[in-house]
Image 1 (cartoon, rainbow, N blue to C red):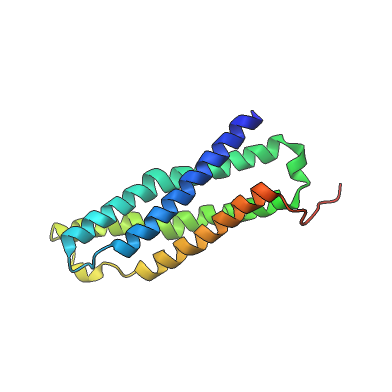
Image 2 (cartoon, rainbow, N blue to C red):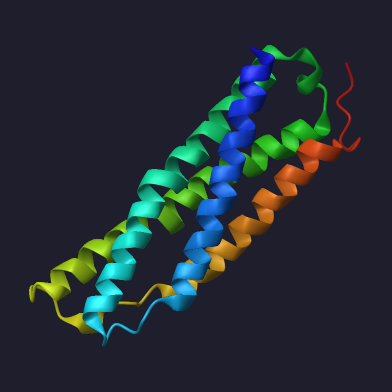
Length: 159
């Protein structure tokens, strides 16, 4: 069971980092909303990445980490594991609220604008916030990987 959880945690982390990196690239290559066809296509792709890669990878990473902590007593006394847990929960909340939700909403809005149902002026209002959030989450995820690899002796929990 420990190897399975480690495998799931590693694969989830790889998917999560890859999804965030691809979203950052797609955001920087996204055309302006005035080029509505290209913008809607890019935002649709970003919404799909956020929904079908980012969110499941985030869930697998968090759940496998929680199960590993519950099943391995050594993790309960390791400060690095608790730091990873805290930042993992923050990543889950940040991922849902500031990445997946806005990207899905912008994809739907741009599709509606392309169909003529919405004014294109309402598009791209959250672009700067999305980019900043992705960079912060990428940094936190990278720090979590580093914590998992090097397992520093921080916050030793007394028994």
